[in-house]
Image 1 (cartoon, rainbow, N blue to C red):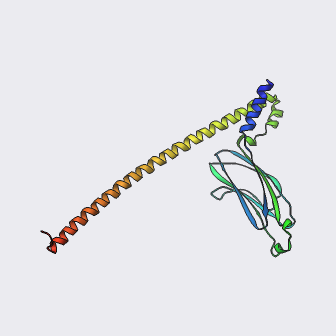
Image 2 (image 1 turned 60 degrees about the vertical axis):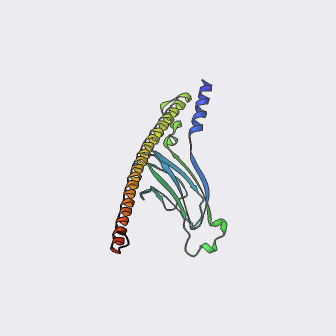
Image 3 (image 1 turned 45 degrees about the vertical axis):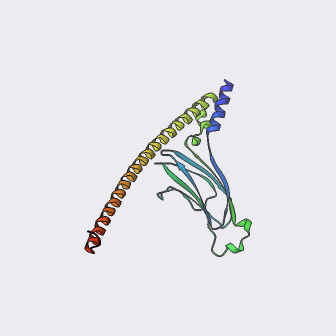
Length: 212
């Protein structure tokens, strides 16, 4: 039983993925991170930004349509969470604003902030420890529950990939048909133009009495 539990734990940890990144954010600079997320998916983000007196950092999370999902004018440390309504590319932007006329009086080490962001979505956002305590589950039951959720997520991903493959195939077939029809139309136009040129030149030469 212990070997099974160890294997399941290793398997789940191997497949699970957490988007975590840390970078430096200079003053008067905006950096954005983009993530492609499926429909009806829970997303959480934990951020930690170095505090600098008089240098607020603006944090904004939005989709491609411009809908603001989270907004913080003076972000330092916290968490945001939302559930996606449709498949989209979501953008997390950090921007440190400089006070007017003070940028040149600040040393380089005081004009750069360190930003750490840990982004999770799907089953990664589920707190299995709290679930185990609430339902009094054994470690193996918790891992089986985690594995079940992971399997459901994988099946959902495959279903989405199949749907996208079908859409791409339909698009390719439609494009091929359009290219075929356009090629036929172009050939007909060229043939019509060639016949018209021959008839026109023949009438011209006859009018000039160059041919009978």
